[in-house]
Length: 347
Ligand SMILES: [Zn+2]
View 1 (cartoon, helix red, strand yellow):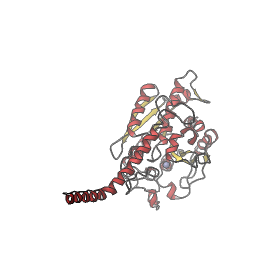
View 2 (spheres, rainbow, N blue to C red; view 1 turned 90 degrees about the vertical axis):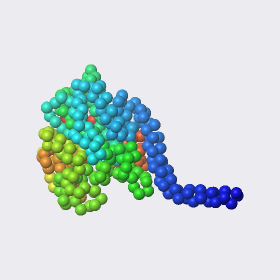
View 3 (cartoon, rainbow, N blue to C red; view 1 turned 180 degrees about the vertical axis):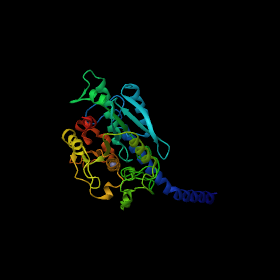
View 4 (cartoon, rainbow, N blue to C red; view 1 turned 120 degrees about the vertical axis):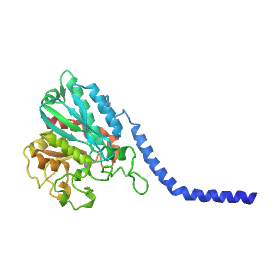
């Protein structure tokens, strides 16, 4: 009897050893989930002092589902100013929403969240929409020094707040793909569900890109998300386009292949002078400008296309990581100045 018990114990021990690698993987992915949920616990509290707006939570890690919910709440709250539709689907058949903000004749385009890991650009864009709407409905109609009511009667902003819903959910909702250790690499993941960097997939010097780390896709415009953005630009005569990214606190506004584009310096320097950005020098490496959305837009339309890097890079942010950008939103994104970005672009 004692011998039998011993052999059962040995078998149990072997089983335990056999499952331990996958158990370790599971523990790792659970750690990511608990990290994210602890961050989500900041909901409704803006670290840095200010209260969050009524609908948009600047500290949240937005998933595609939450983006859709909050957008429809915005549309219900501000029906005279906001129209919601879609530019099409992602690879995983998720909706890519479109917000039309304003009632003006001039049209311009704003794209956020094209890189999976850069979900904080979604928060920035949606929070801007909500605050501009609130200002429009106020008695003054002003947002800071900007007469937002007047600006939104001149302009309609076509806003894609989440250009890459699959990438957003891979990073913020722990969806696949994961790397070989079972750990979601949300610090670095830029791609869509195919692992393609959409901001290197546009038909502009695409063949000349030789740097494999750009993850440019199988051919130019191979991805559904890219196609949908291009169609929106072709269907509308946009005055300018802003492509929102995260690190650098600077504006990429020119590349050597396109050269000068009418109105580009005026738009970029206005944002520099009023919203706290630096201007980058012209991009000269085809591995940087090839396949880029704003670069393609300049080429296609002959109008200004700007890449805006929102997050500061200075002593304040040097110890921050992707989690902290959401947690310390106001500080990391220099919100007190950058919140006027879209208003200044319309001015
Ligand atoms: Zn980016």
